[in-house]
Image 1 (tube, rainbow, N blue to C red):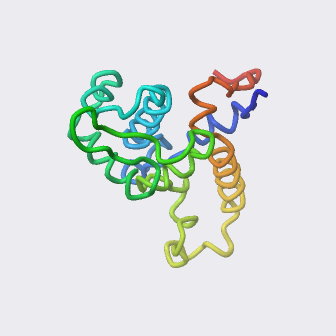
Image 2: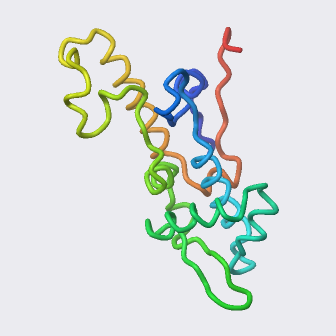
Amino acid sequence: MTEIISDSIMKETNAVVDLRRNDNMRISTKARYALRALIELARRERNGPTSIKLISRRQGISPTYLNQLMLKLRKAGLVKSVKGPGGGFLLAKPAKKIRVMDVLSAIGELLPPVPCLQKGASSTCKRQKSCPTRPLWKLMWNRIENNLRAVTIEMLCSGEIEIEPEEGLY
């Protein structure tokens, strides 16, 4: 079964926002690397544990940076480590049970498009209750979160996701 994610939602929102660069909505490097590492583990699952060195080489990610990400993913229960010769990392649960939302939450990269939508951010904007654009940002963020909950590592590995082309966009 093919999942179709609206191209307009993905192009308009780019899923994860880096508030340090408030000029654009972008998917962070951490988020991209964490997803690529988990996809690599899922694809190599039947071969046993996969070393940081191998993931690093195959995905073009610094081993030091990758170690930091894997620690966060391990703490979140998404991967497990195997020590010793032939050791490395394995998925802690089946790829079909790991959602993109879980990964982004684990590495702390799940940020809404505007500060007023962050959890516990009730005092970030004095206009929050009367803001005419807040419903738009909330709607957009809800759709992003729904897409992130719907997509699994297994789906990314198998290419199940198709983007629905829309006229007039890029």
